[in-house]
Amino acid sequence: MLQGSRIRISPMQFSDIEEVVKIERRIFPSPWSIEIFEEQLNRTDCAFYFVVKVDDKIVGYAGIIFTGDEGHITNVAVNENYRRRKIGSALLLRLIEMAQDKRSRHLFLELRKSNKVALKFYEKFGFQILGLRRNYYSDTCLPVGTAGEDAVVMFVNNVSSANYQDRLQIIRDSIGFGEV
Image 1: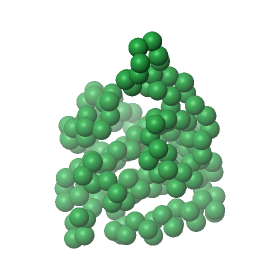
Image 2: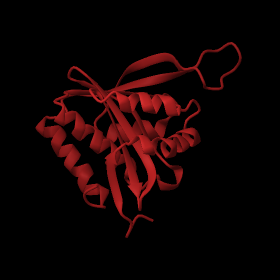
Image 3: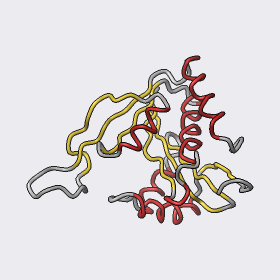
């Protein structure tokens, strides 16, 4: 599906937000609004967001916020029709490269405890489970009287180490559609 297509990752622009929110609404039970994305793009000192385009169509996006020597990955999302094509891997690689450029040592993220596919995806990048945030997702449909779904907190340490660079190079090599 991607062979012969032009794939490009670029910084998210305000003009991209409407398409990003369409993907966001299809994927997440509690999607971010246009206003939240606008707020994030206005945080030019610490927040960085990217879109991936296939033949000029936005098919995914990702974001990261930096505080001190830590990066917090806020989202990685790919349109359902483009999953399993290494687009999410290319986006996460871009976030990790941004973290290295910003001299961050540690990366963190949260994901739904029930999202086993995402858990395996992040483990491939060396993320480890740090713990749980109880009742983090209040939008989950659970039986009456119960709280929301737990979030798994994951982290990766020392993203600039030689061992981690070796891991990333293997992932880069496996993507198969060259520089993005």
